[in-house]
Length: 162
Image (cartoon, rainbow, N blue to C red):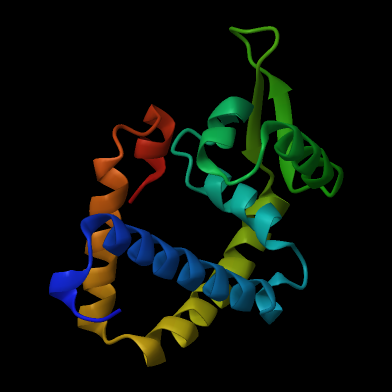
């Protein structure tokens, strides 16, 4: 980039997006390779983490889909694997014959806490040396602002967000 004044708004937006995306991919690759994910893949952890934040304990499969980064078909297969491992329980939705409700089993909740503690330390180990506390707060503020500008999120996701 030459100077800030000469960069068009479109180019600046594209460069900003590319930087944000590449930083996210680099961080995710490091986190996926971390020891925290020896027992469970990152995408499986994403499911049990999301279920752990559900206030009622139960979450519809389609609501879970709104909160994780997987396609519906991949999510259904992943949930089946987690159920076979005894980490997730499922039951038919009482008010909808086609709906499925999911919740963590006690084993799933224990594994989420175990991995979560290590995962948070790994995140701190990546962000701490790279960004000051003030920079981390500013990055969070900016990413929240960007996400909020995109319009309302599904109701369940708003409930799960801190």
